[in-house]
Length: 195
Image 1 (cartoon, rainbow, N blue to C red):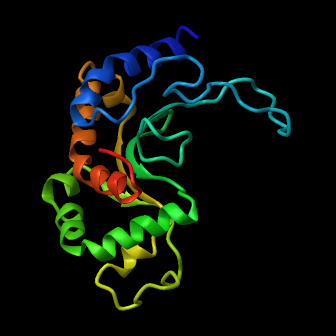
Image 2: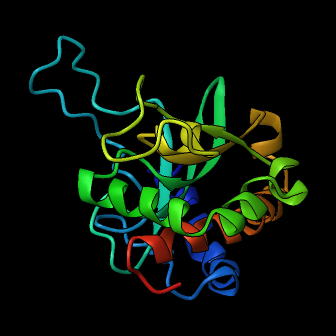
């Protein structure tokens, strides 16, 4: 608790005001259960490995209307050998995915401006799963067909364990979140939520 949970909850609490400046609709909830922090205990019921704790700590700062990890959100993952920051929609359901795809089709100039901006590209890379073929009902020749084939709309910025332990790490995380602001605003509005 002292080594993982308490420092993560303090980080979440301290990050709250910075997140509110990016968008007041996203939540930094420092409660130990049901808040931004993912649980630190493993579900060992069906696993041969009965070790009680996960080897990683993670937090999602999701939209106030989001109920789970599939809502638009900012994400922080801390694990030995794998430290990264992410933003977007991970594994959204079919209707949500369709809304994002239709928003791209209806606002192609805005989508292009956001996804090709230097400020975003300098901080992150696009990641996630994609369909092999174009989704049904969308033009296979569309300018953004590769984006329309996405099953996840996620950006990722990797960093090192050393940087994650540096005194200015919260500044680094906030910088990545700010770089994602227009991208997140597009996704949030596309799914019918307030930015």
